[in-house]
Length: 464
Image (cartoon, rainbow, N blue to C red):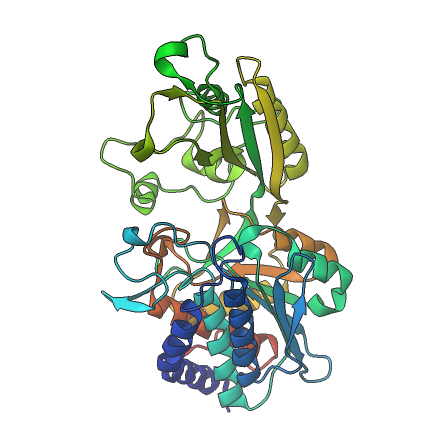
């Protein structure tokens, strides 16, 4: 079989497998696999792990097993051998999802894969069940066309990535043999725009904290005590407001915010569209650019506040209020040290002598990829064939703590971050969706990459 005909046959197998992928993705989306039993039953995650194991087994991966991790989640792992001396490739994804939020904010049922205007909607359809199904489709196509693996293929699909609770990281550190590889595909990112193949080469570190402010044993009537009463909600808001200056620059005491992004510039107009900015609202640039604030400088974001909702308003100054603050830092910044600075800053900027309790919630270190090896070269060729365009590289403001851990455990491995996500996917938001053609192209990319790394494709061989 010529290299060109192999690429064509892989493309045809991927195309033929799309209807089945849609059905399997619908089965996955129907499982409410939020790794927080306070939000969704743990049985939903267990069912999702079982289905993932079934899908990998059907795709031909050997030894599929669900490992219990220290945080109580299940990680689905397996490994199939390839030719003697062939490279080892690890495919990573996760089956847990973020909560749906307010169901009424969705135009389609969040737990039902629904096709609308050419996209497939549902929680996890992109992040990360769509990414998982792209890998499954790639494996199915390779198995169908070749009948055997061109490389040694290992899979890891975790069940608590969105919680940043470190379950898989702890499992991998205890059993490093599960993640041994020469090339690692972290399928949990995506492209800067639909149809433009993108490799993410840097990730920010992250650290969230839960801050509780207390000033009185109970709320106090605002008519009788307001003005003199030390309002806990106002104290909290004052501390939170100190995290940014008027230009939007994050200003945590002691934390450098002068970094400059040295990669490709981020187009401001595209950012306005992708982020859905309202008319008259401009992107925050601080003293730099959008790219600087996204990838080269820290960013503090207030994720949630507990206080009386407007629907239950009473005339009272609050005695207690709390908030979750997330801090993102550039890849080369010590995330743990930055989190410590955030905690100290919030304490120092809370007024009224309030009692302040701050607990770390999550912590993940940043990551920067090495991009000059043979696996990256093979991936660029695969992307060129699958998308018909040369790949670009980008940074990402999000964090994947596992990337740093795996870089430590398999220091010689080439780590690549890619996936089906793109701005219109609206991951973590109401109305999450996936473009099925992006899923198809990503699956073909992975199939071509595995064949190329196994020496079955000549550089430049392409499918029409």
